[in-house]
Image (cartoon, one colour):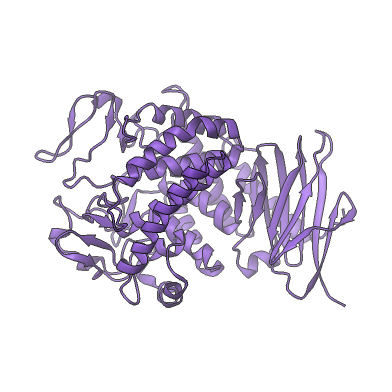
Length: 527
C-alpha cells in the first residue's frame, strides 16, 4: 500500500507508542492520538487503574471499583452504575472472559421478582449498615437491595445497569447462544423496572445515580436511561426472534419518552425531578437531566434546537475545572432536597461527564468533547494518574483511586472521540467526533475484535488500515465526503463499496495469521 503519512506523522505515532510502553504490562491494543497528554492518560487509566482492579483471587471475574482493590471494601461488588462503567471499559481492553464471569456472579443475586442489588457486601451479610438512625439490612446472601438513605434512591439503577451490560457483552461477542440463555433473566429485571413506571410514564426510584440530593421521586436522569435501556433490550429481543418482547419494551420506552417530553420540558430546559408534593423542580440552573435528554435521544427535535445553544458552552458544569457537575447553580439547593444530613453529590462526577460526552458526540461537537477529555486527563496527570470519586470547588474528595473517571475516559475516547460501535449485526462502525487538528495530524488505533484484529489510521481525505481475522468483517465508516469522489481498495484492488448518506460500507475478507487484508479509502476532488 502507498504510504500516505509523512515522516513527521510516523515519528509522532512512534512517540505515542513509546508513551504506552512506559506503562506496566502494555497490552497489544494501542490508540494513536495526536495529543500526548490524552494518550498517556488513556494508557494509565487502562493499566494503572482498570486492569489493576481485576483480582481473580477473590473470585473469577472479580474487579474492584478502586485501583488499589481496597476502596469501598475488599471483595465488594457494585453492580449498579460501577458494574457497567467497569465492564464496558474492560471490554474495550479485551477482558471479555472477566466481564462474562462477573455477569454470572451478579446474576446469581437476582431475586424472583427481577430485583438486583445495588451492592454486594459478603462480609456484611445479614447485618445492618449505615449511619446511626439511617440503616438498612444487608440480605443474608450479601446483597444490599434497599438503600440506607431515606426514600431508597438508586432503585432504577441496578436493572438499567444489567440491561446495559447485556447489550455491550452481546455487541462485543456477537454470541447469539449466550444472548438466548441470558434474555429470560434480563427481561425479568426489565419487568421489575417497569413496575417503577407510573401509568402516565414517569419512572420512579428517586435519584438515579445520586443519593444526596435524593431527587424524590422521579429523577429526570432516570427517565432517559430507562427509556434507553428498554430500547436496547427491545433490539436484543428482536435479534433473538422474540418480536412480542420487542414490541413490549419499545412500547414502554415510548411511554416514558412521551411523558418526559410533555411534562419535564419547561420551555427552555428540562426539570431536574418531580417531587410528589412540590411538583417539578427546575430552579438549579441547567442540570445533568438536560445532558441526559440529548444523550439518550428522548428530547424532541424542537427541544434540542432550543436547549443545545444553552448547553453547548455552559461553563457552570465545570467545578474547579473538572467536568461534569450535576447542576450549574449548586448553591441553590435547599435542605429539604436531601433526606440525609448532607448533599455530597453536589459534585462533578465521571458518571455525569460520560453523559455530557455522549450528548456532545450526538451533536457532533468535537471541540466541546475534546475539552472535557483534556480536563479529565489533566486531573489524572496532576494526581499521578489516579482520580477521586467527586470534585467540587475545593478539589477532589470521596474515594481515592476511584475507577469511575478512568473507566469513563476509556469509554469516552472509544465510543465518542474515535466513534467505535459494535453493531448488533456484527458489523463494526466508525463515526469519530474528532477536532480538525486530529484530522490534520492523523489518528487511529489497533483494536481487538471477536474474530480478529483491526488496525486503522484516519487523516483528512484518507483512511487506511488492515484486518486480520478468521472470518470476514463488515466495516462501516461515517465520513463527510460531500463533493468528493470515493476510491476504495482492498488488497490493492479497487472495489465498489455500499454508500448510504455519509456512510461507506465494505467487507474485509478473512485472512491467515501471516497476512492481513489491507484497505484504503481515499476522498478525492471531483474532476
